[in-house]
Image (cartoon, rainbow, N blue to C red; front, side):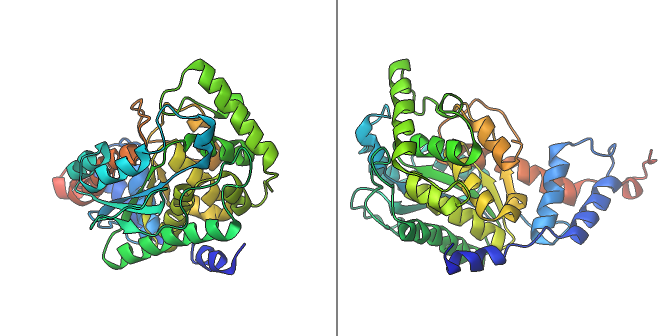
Length: 350
């Protein structure tokens, strides 16, 4: 692994046990039966361990939407054409996508990053960090070089570093890239050990015939690229996408800076799976937002070791499920700060 990634990974430390014990003591003092708020309590304790504070301020939140194109779209694996990627990026930047709506509702920022869109994009709000104009066709060759994958990871890490310096403490993983369920499923097969039948789903809504074709394309990709399953960066470079690599950097960066990172759906979870294999300690900093309807997402989360907060039958991507779950983080934070204790309320403790 490149030295720069090793240095990032070295910064990721175990959760702060003292802060978690203080959070647990606070939770147990509140006017409720122990553990009765379920995952809200779990998240509150995890947030304490991540930040090192028993009652951290989680109000500064952002979704980082990484965008990149995929050469494998040449194989007809998506219901939408590749030109939708740059069109949707402009939609994000103009505030009109679903993730924008949900982010406004949650009081979160949307940061859109061009890390590999196959078009020249200009917009005052665009974060332009393009590594290359889309990946190569994984059915025939490696998606990108190891150096390019490393550079895309660096993009994610640097953006998180810049945002943490400005006060952001909670990140959501968002993405845009037509065809990106295909590399995500390939990553799941390579790192998670699932079969194509288990891992490959309908993405944007393809029919049965195209689903069979998509599985065949992924099988060809696995044959064309002899990946080292013990080297997550090799799997990412050969089978992944630039936006997936960028999200790996977001996840590792959040963990290195002791910030929470909320994982969205199938594609974001592919990045989380890669990050978990690069840096196992990073899993402690992840919160799984929801269970996507995309085939293989359950297996993806199991491979990482995550349990989702909500089941809403969503499969849009963009970071929508992660941003929606920001409200649960707010609820957990407010419980810790505003709920009365047995002592302050004069309630007899069981």
